[in-house]
Image 1: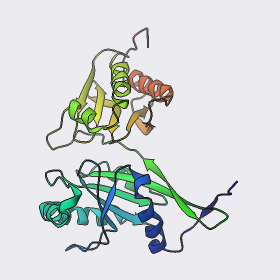
Image 2: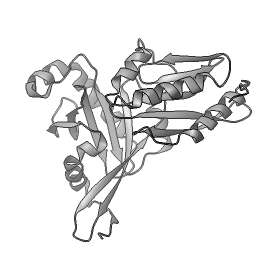
Image 3: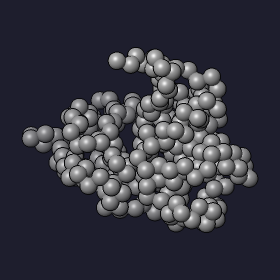
Length: 270
């Protein structure tokens, strides 16, 4: 049996090499367009396209780095302006230039400040913390840990529909599970409003969001606000649903608690 140990890459170049071989581990269907493609504002580490034809900018840091979000947004600004040109540069990759790019940031760790700042920007920003492992034969692999935080306020851009979010999932067997969770959340009490934003499906009570669902191509995240009995948001917790067999009951209980702490009265069956 192979013995796995945690491994520290010597530098970012080595980390890039490991990631490039396992891009599909970040997201199924993610395909490399260009490694270190120069732009007018710098050189993003990876320029990719996802399974839906959307351009993805990936920026990698070996360690925690407070500059990474600003750096990625500079690349985004340049690439977003030239996405039709990029689609022409890679005609065989089925890029959809009508879609704005996504941003994926990868680092060993992200500070609380970066986690919260990502909720304030308009482009889609996803955070992944990584762990590199090595076996007894010096084979290296990498595990990505998604960091999920919702936007607290609705996007200022025109929101897409709830059906658009559901349709974004290509794994059809997950859609009934998603709709089941939606129905469960809406049935826990009165005055619950479900609404779409550009990035997620939100649930609010008397103007306060307390739960959300974020869809991906092959999965979705179900999350709850952690709200104390004075109505203060303390944190967020979520679960990623990938095969429909995950036990999301703990997050559902936290959803009910958040609703109750905002002044809602739970239905008896909840």
